[in-house]
Length: 249
Ligand SMILES: Cc1cc2nc3c(=O)[nH]c(=O)nc-3n(C[C@H](O)[C@H](O)[C@H](O)COP(=O)(O)OP(=O)(O)OC[C@H]3O[C@@H](n4cnc5c(N)ncnc54)[C@H](O)[C@@H]3O)c2cc1C
Image 1 (cartoon, rainbow, N blue to C red):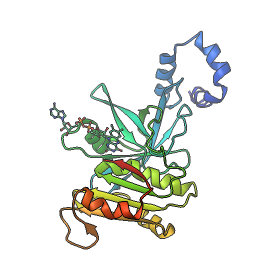
Image 2: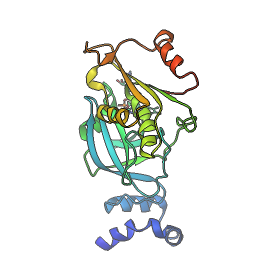
Image 3: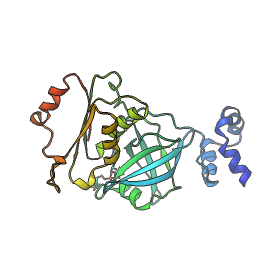
Image 4: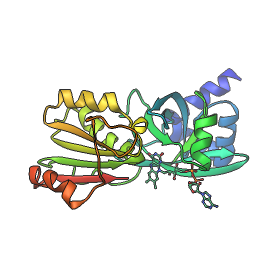
Protein backbone atom coordinates (compact mmCIF):
# COMPACT_ATOMS: atom_id res chain seq x y z
CA UNK A 1 0.00 0.00 0.00
CA UNK A 2 2.74 2.50 1.02
CA UNK A 3 4.63 2.01 -2.24
CA UNK A 4 1.47 2.55 -4.28
CA UNK A 5 0.80 5.82 -2.46
CA UNK A 6 4.39 6.99 -2.80
CA UNK A 7 4.43 6.24 -6.53
CA UNK A 8 1.13 8.16 -6.89
CA UNK A 9 2.66 11.10 -5.06
CA UNK A 10 5.67 11.22 -7.40
CA UNK A 11 3.43 10.76 -10.45
CA UNK A 12 3.47 14.42 -11.57
CA UNK A 13 7.25 14.53 -12.08
CA UNK A 14 7.12 11.48 -14.29
CA UNK A 15 3.79 12.47 -15.79
CA UNK A 16 4.45 12.63 -19.54
CA UNK A 17 6.11 9.22 -19.79
CA UNK A 18 3.99 7.48 -17.17
CA UNK A 19 0.76 9.05 -18.40
CA UNK A 20 1.41 7.62 -21.84
CA UNK A 21 1.92 4.15 -20.43
CA UNK A 22 -0.91 4.38 -17.91
CA UNK A 23 -3.31 5.78 -20.48
CA UNK A 24 -3.47 2.40 -22.14
CA UNK A 25 -4.34 0.71 -18.85
CA UNK A 26 -6.51 3.08 -16.86
CA UNK A 27 -8.79 6.00 -17.67
CA UNK A 28 -8.24 9.48 -16.25
CA UNK A 29 -11.28 9.25 -14.00
CA UNK A 30 -10.22 5.82 -12.72
CA UNK A 31 -6.75 7.16 -11.96
CA UNK A 32 -8.18 10.15 -10.06
CA UNK A 33 -10.59 7.89 -8.19
CA UNK A 34 -7.91 5.46 -7.04
CA UNK A 35 -5.48 8.23 -6.12
CA UNK A 36 -8.17 9.65 -3.80
CA UNK A 37 -8.95 6.18 -2.44
CA UNK A 38 -5.27 5.88 -1.45
CA UNK A 39 -5.42 9.25 0.31
CA UNK A 40 -3.43 11.20 -2.31
CA UNK A 41 -4.42 14.53 -3.87
CA UNK A 42 -2.51 13.63 -7.02
CA UNK A 43 -4.71 13.71 -10.11
CA UNK A 44 -4.29 13.38 -13.83
CA UNK A 45 -5.39 16.93 -14.61
CA UNK A 46 -7.87 18.01 -11.95
CA UNK A 47 -6.83 20.23 -9.06
CA UNK A 48 -7.37 18.82 -5.58
CA UNK A 49 -6.20 20.74 -2.54
CA UNK A 50 -5.74 19.65 1.05
CA UNK A 51 -6.81 21.92 3.90
CA UNK A 52 -3.64 22.92 5.77
CA UNK A 53 -5.05 25.31 8.34
CA UNK A 54 -8.20 27.20 9.31
CA UNK A 55 -8.53 30.56 11.04
CA UNK A 56 -11.35 32.99 11.71
CA UNK A 57 -11.08 36.52 10.34
CA UNK A 58 -13.49 38.66 12.30
CA UNK A 59 -16.76 37.09 13.41
CA UNK A 60 -18.05 35.48 10.23
CA UNK A 61 -15.22 34.74 7.84
CA UNK A 62 -13.15 31.57 7.80
CA UNK A 63 -9.78 31.61 6.06
CA UNK A 64 -8.71 28.27 4.63
CA UNK A 65 -5.09 27.66 3.67
CA UNK A 66 -5.04 25.02 0.91
CA UNK A 67 -2.14 23.06 -0.50
CA UNK A 68 -3.09 22.24 -4.10
CA UNK A 69 -1.58 19.44 -6.14
CA UNK A 70 0.88 20.21 -8.91
CA UNK A 71 -1.82 20.71 -11.52
CA UNK A 72 -2.62 24.11 -9.98
CA UNK A 73 -1.17 26.99 -11.98
CA UNK A 74 0.29 30.02 -10.28
CA UNK A 75 -2.23 32.78 -9.56
CA UNK A 76 -2.20 36.49 -10.28
CA UNK A 77 -3.18 38.87 -7.46
CA UNK A 78 -6.94 39.28 -7.07
CA UNK A 79 -7.91 36.11 -8.92
CA UNK A 80 -10.53 33.64 -7.74
CA UNK A 81 -11.10 29.91 -7.93
CA UNK A 82 -14.19 27.77 -8.19
CA UNK A 83 -14.34 25.50 -5.16
CA UNK A 84 -16.26 22.23 -5.29
CA UNK A 85 -17.36 20.44 -2.18
CA UNK A 86 -19.50 17.33 -1.79
CA UNK A 87 -22.62 17.91 0.32
CA UNK A 88 -25.01 14.99 0.86
CA UNK A 89 -23.65 13.25 -2.24
CA UNK A 90 -23.97 16.32 -4.46
CA UNK A 91 -21.01 18.27 -5.81
CA UNK A 92 -21.63 21.97 -5.11
CA UNK A 93 -19.45 24.68 -6.64
CA UNK A 94 -18.99 28.31 -5.59
CA UNK A 95 -16.42 30.98 -6.46
CA UNK A 96 -14.02 32.29 -3.82
CA UNK A 97 -11.32 34.92 -4.23
CA UNK A 98 -7.79 34.18 -3.19
CA UNK A 99 -7.25 36.12 0.03
CA UNK A 100 -4.11 35.80 2.15
CA UNK A 101 -0.91 35.93 0.09
CA UNK A 102 0.44 32.62 -1.18
CA UNK A 103 2.96 31.06 1.19
CA UNK A 104 4.89 27.79 1.31
CA UNK A 105 3.00 26.27 -1.61
CA UNK A 106 -0.39 27.15 -0.10
CA UNK A 107 -3.09 29.49 -1.34
CA UNK A 108 -5.87 30.86 0.86
CA UNK A 109 -9.53 31.58 0.41
CA UNK A 110 -11.77 33.30 2.98
CA UNK A 111 -15.40 32.24 3.19
CA UNK A 112 -18.03 34.39 4.88
CA UNK A 113 -21.10 32.73 6.38
CA UNK A 114 -24.08 33.56 4.20
CA UNK A 115 -27.39 33.32 6.13
CA UNK A 116 -29.23 30.32 4.64
CA UNK A 117 -26.32 29.62 2.29
CA UNK A 118 -25.52 25.98 1.46
CA UNK A 119 -21.79 25.90 0.75
CA UNK A 120 -20.55 28.66 3.04
CA UNK A 121 -22.31 27.17 6.08
CA UNK A 122 -21.17 23.66 5.20
CA UNK A 123 -17.59 24.91 5.03
CA UNK A 124 -17.87 26.73 8.37
CA UNK A 125 -19.55 23.83 10.15
CA UNK A 126 -17.85 20.77 8.69
CA UNK A 127 -14.51 21.54 7.01
CA UNK A 128 -11.51 20.20 8.93
CA UNK A 129 -7.73 20.31 8.50
CA UNK A 130 -6.75 17.41 6.19
CA UNK A 131 -9.99 17.50 4.16
CA UNK A 132 -9.73 17.75 0.38
CA UNK A 133 -11.53 20.24 -1.88
CA UNK A 134 -11.52 20.45 -5.64
CA UNK A 135 -10.44 23.76 -7.18
CA UNK A 136 -10.55 25.22 -10.66
CA UNK A 137 -7.51 26.95 -12.04
CA UNK A 138 -7.31 30.57 -10.80
CA UNK A 139 -8.90 33.12 -13.10
CA UNK A 140 -9.99 36.76 -13.25
CA UNK A 141 -8.41 40.04 -14.25
CA UNK A 142 -8.92 42.28 -11.24
CA UNK A 143 -5.20 43.15 -11.23
CA UNK A 144 -5.37 44.79 -14.65
CA UNK A 145 -3.92 48.29 -14.27
CA UNK A 146 -2.20 47.46 -10.99
CA UNK A 147 1.35 47.64 -12.31
CA UNK A 148 2.59 51.12 -13.11
CA UNK A 149 -0.29 52.97 -11.44
CA UNK A 150 0.83 56.27 -9.87
CA UNK A 151 -1.50 55.50 -6.96
CA UNK A 152 -4.04 52.81 -6.14
CA UNK A 153 -7.46 53.33 -4.63
CA UNK A 154 -9.17 50.22 -3.29
CA UNK A 155 -12.89 50.09 -2.47
CA UNK A 156 -14.09 46.98 -0.64
CA UNK A 157 -17.46 46.10 0.84
CA UNK A 158 -18.21 42.99 2.90
CA UNK A 159 -16.65 39.81 1.52
CA UNK A 160 -15.25 41.88 -1.35
CA UNK A 161 -12.32 42.57 0.99
CA UNK A 162 -10.90 39.11 0.21
CA UNK A 163 -9.90 39.91 -3.37
CA UNK A 164 -8.89 43.47 -2.50
CA UNK A 165 -6.73 42.29 0.40
CA UNK A 166 -5.08 39.79 -1.92
CA UNK A 167 -4.26 42.58 -4.41
CA UNK A 168 -2.70 44.67 -1.65
CA UNK A 169 -0.91 41.93 0.29
CA UNK A 170 0.52 40.20 -2.78
CA UNK A 171 2.12 43.47 -3.87
CA UNK A 172 3.66 43.92 -0.43
CA UNK A 173 4.87 40.31 -0.42
CA UNK A 174 6.58 40.90 -3.75
CA UNK A 175 8.37 43.94 -2.31
CA UNK A 176 6.39 46.62 -4.17
CA UNK A 177 5.78 49.93 -2.40
CA UNK A 178 2.10 50.65 -1.71
CA UNK A 179 0.83 54.14 -2.49
CA UNK A 180 -2.83 54.96 -2.10
CA UNK A 181 -5.80 54.15 0.11
CA UNK A 182 -8.17 51.36 0.96
CA UNK A 183 -11.75 52.30 1.87
CA UNK A 184 -13.48 49.33 3.45
CA UNK A 185 -17.17 49.03 4.43
CA UNK A 186 -18.72 46.51 6.82
CA UNK A 187 -22.21 46.40 8.30
CA UNK A 188 -20.90 45.54 11.78
CA UNK A 189 -17.59 46.21 13.48
CA UNK A 190 -17.09 42.51 14.33
CA UNK A 191 -17.06 41.64 10.65
CA UNK A 192 -13.89 43.53 9.72
CA UNK A 193 -11.20 41.17 8.39
CA UNK A 194 -7.39 41.32 8.13
CA UNK A 195 -7.33 44.23 10.61
CA UNK A 196 -3.89 43.60 12.11
CA UNK A 197 -2.37 42.80 8.73
CA UNK A 198 -3.74 45.93 7.07
CA UNK A 199 -2.67 48.13 9.99
CA UNK A 200 0.83 46.61 9.79
CA UNK A 201 0.98 47.40 6.08
CA UNK A 202 0.11 51.04 6.87
CA UNK A 203 3.09 51.11 9.25
CA UNK A 204 5.56 49.66 6.74
CA UNK A 205 4.16 51.59 3.75
CA UNK A 206 3.79 55.21 4.91
CA UNK A 207 2.08 56.22 1.67
CA UNK A 208 -0.70 53.69 2.18
CA UNK A 209 -3.67 54.11 4.52
CA UNK A 210 -6.93 52.36 5.40
CA UNK A 211 -10.25 54.01 6.19
CA UNK A 212 -12.94 51.77 7.66
CA UNK A 213 -16.63 52.56 7.34
CA UNK A 214 -19.31 51.10 9.56
CA UNK A 215 -22.82 52.39 10.07
CA UNK A 216 -23.76 50.28 13.08
CA UNK A 217 -22.48 48.97 16.37
CA UNK A 218 -19.73 51.48 17.10
CA UNK A 219 -19.64 55.17 17.77
CA UNK A 220 -15.87 55.50 18.10
CA UNK A 221 -13.84 57.69 15.81
CA UNK A 222 -12.11 54.57 14.46
CA UNK A 223 -14.88 54.21 11.91
CA UNK A 224 -16.33 56.56 9.35
CA UNK A 225 -20.00 56.38 8.43
CA UNK A 226 -21.88 56.72 5.17
CA UNK A 227 -22.21 54.79 1.97
CA UNK A 228 -20.11 55.43 -1.11
CA UNK A 229 -21.40 58.50 -2.95
CA UNK A 230 -19.89 61.27 -5.10
CA UNK A 231 -19.82 63.51 -2.01
CA UNK A 232 -18.10 60.94 0.20
CA UNK A 233 -15.62 60.07 -2.56
CA UNK A 234 -14.80 63.68 -3.51
CA UNK A 235 -11.72 64.09 -1.25
CA UNK A 236 -10.38 60.77 -2.49
CA UNK A 237 -10.70 61.91 -6.10
CA UNK A 238 -8.93 65.16 -5.26
CA UNK A 239 -6.04 63.40 -3.53
CA UNK A 240 -5.53 60.85 -6.30
CA UNK A 241 -6.72 62.34 -9.60
CA UNK A 242 -4.84 59.76 -11.69
CA UNK A 243 -5.16 56.69 -9.49
CA UNK A 244 -6.16 53.24 -10.69
CA UNK A 245 -9.33 52.25 -8.83
CA UNK A 246 -10.14 48.67 -7.81
CA UNK A 247 -13.55 47.83 -6.36
CA UNK A 248 -15.05 44.60 -5.07
CA UNK A 249 -18.20 44.06 -3.05
C1 LIG B 1 -16.02 36.00 -8.44
C2 LIG B 1 -16.61 35.71 -7.08
C3 LIG B 1 -15.79 35.74 -5.97
C4 LIG B 1 -16.32 35.49 -4.70
N1 LIG B 1 -15.47 35.53 -3.63
C5 LIG B 1 -15.97 35.30 -2.40
C6 LIG B 1 -15.11 35.33 -1.26
O1 LIG B 1 -13.89 35.56 -1.37
N2 LIG B 1 -15.64 35.08 -0.04
C7 LIG B 1 -17.00 34.81 0.12
O2 LIG B 1 -17.42 34.58 1.26
N3 LIG B 1 -17.82 34.77 -0.94
C8 LIG B 1 -17.35 34.98 -2.18
N4 LIG B 1 -18.19 34.90 -3.26
C9 LIG B 1 -19.58 34.46 -3.06
C10 LIG B 1 -19.63 32.90 -3.04
O3 LIG B 1 -19.33 32.42 -4.34
C11 LIG B 1 -21.00 32.34 -2.67
O4 LIG B 1 -21.97 32.96 -3.47
C12 LIG B 1 -21.33 32.55 -1.19
O5 LIG B 1 -20.39 31.87 -0.37
C13 LIG B 1 -22.73 31.99 -0.88
O6 LIG B 1 -22.78 30.65 -1.23
P1 LIG B 1 -23.69 29.63 -0.41
O7 LIG B 1 -23.67 28.31 -1.09
O8 LIG B 1 -23.36 29.68 1.03
O9 LIG B 1 -25.12 30.28 -0.56
P2 LIG B 1 -26.28 29.78 -1.56
O10 LIG B 1 -26.82 28.47 -1.10
O11 LIG B 1 -25.80 29.87 -2.94
O12 LIG B 1 -27.37 30.89 -1.26
C14 LIG B 1 -27.11 32.25 -1.54
C15 LIG B 1 -28.26 33.06 -0.97
O13 LIG B 1 -29.46 32.70 -1.64
C16 LIG B 1 -30.45 32.33 -0.69
N5 LIG B 1 -31.23 31.23 -1.27
C17 LIG B 1 -30.79 29.98 -1.51
N6 LIG B 1 -31.78 29.26 -2.08
C18 LIG B 1 -32.84 30.09 -2.19
C19 LIG B 1 -34.16 29.95 -2.71
N7 LIG B 1 -34.58 28.79 -3.21
N8 LIG B 1 -34.97 31.02 -2.65
C20 LIG B 1 -34.57 32.19 -2.16
N9 LIG B 1 -33.33 32.39 -1.67
C21 LIG B 1 -32.49 31.35 -1.68
C22 LIG B 1 -29.68 31.90 0.56
O14 LIG B 1 -30.43 32.11 1.74
C23 LIG B 1 -28.50 32.81 0.52
O15 LIG B 1 -28.76 34.03 1.14
C24 LIG B 1 -17.69 35.18 -4.54
C25 LIG B 1 -18.51 35.14 -5.67
C26 LIG B 1 -17.98 35.40 -6.92
C27 LIG B 1 -18.91 35.35 -8.12
